[in-house]
Length: 201
Image: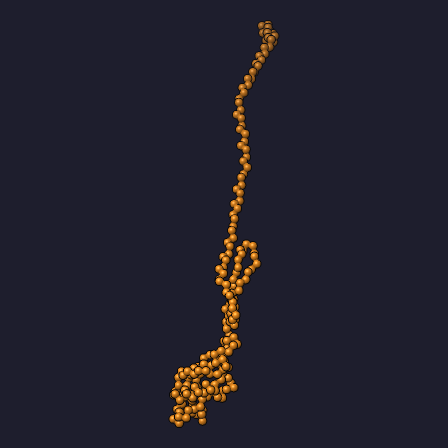
């Protein structure tokens, strides 16, 4: 019976419910402000450096004193002055060109073959009788007409040999005269004459 009562008391005990209300208190935590991003600075490109290149002006040649030409038979002409057309960037001025020097054409005197038979002088009689032979070398001045104008002794075996050689040269020797650019002129020439008994017979 006591047990029944105890059991009845247990089952009849009102249910006590404990409600626990949770109160949440919020605390505002300040958030630091994020600074704005720095503005992007535009990239400044260096300006290309402009160089001014000055072209060197060509040196102007020094013009020689003008040459006044006079009447002359000389074939060498005076200085010729040529003025070229103006070309931008090359400067202006007068360019002087000197003509190349004239080279004269020279020809020496030659023995005229028409007078070859009278080239050998007459054998001196005294030298023939003495049986002497010899050689004479002379230097002769040949005129523009081809005749011998002067005879100079270079060497001679005897005076007799030289005298007949000089006489023959002045009277009988003939030449084709030397020329300068085709114009006959005087010239000197050295010649030798031999005196041999066997050749005279």
